Image (cartoon, rainbow, N blue to C red; front, side, top):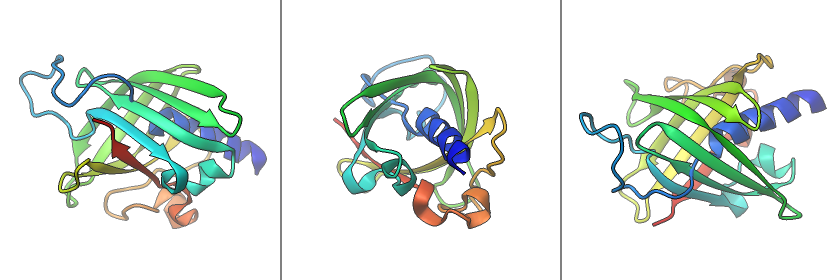
Length: 171
């Protein structure tokens, strides 16, 4: 179980901790298409950190999603030690409300792929994002959440909201 949680942590951190220095108005390579709502700088701390991560000592996550489909995520533990995650992502709007599918291809500190969903509440100021993702490669036996089943659907709902991360946009 501990091995599974460690892999899940890596997957969640790799996927969920993706953001740093650009603002929503920064230009990039996506000039011909609408900017994804995930683009921007995000912060998760306190009760916004997924309970699964809190249980593993993660207390703060700073994420930057760029419009060139790159990301940087920095996670902090209870001793303020930080880990930086980097890679690329793809995202597309699903047929369910404002939920997007996302695939994270992490390159640092280790290569892996994570799959999940996110939704950005554009009515809030600052914007708020709900994010749920799990590692799929290397396979750790986790089943990604789906837009149809909504947030809390990782592993068919077995984890409830333990893997659901909340972020607030940093302007």
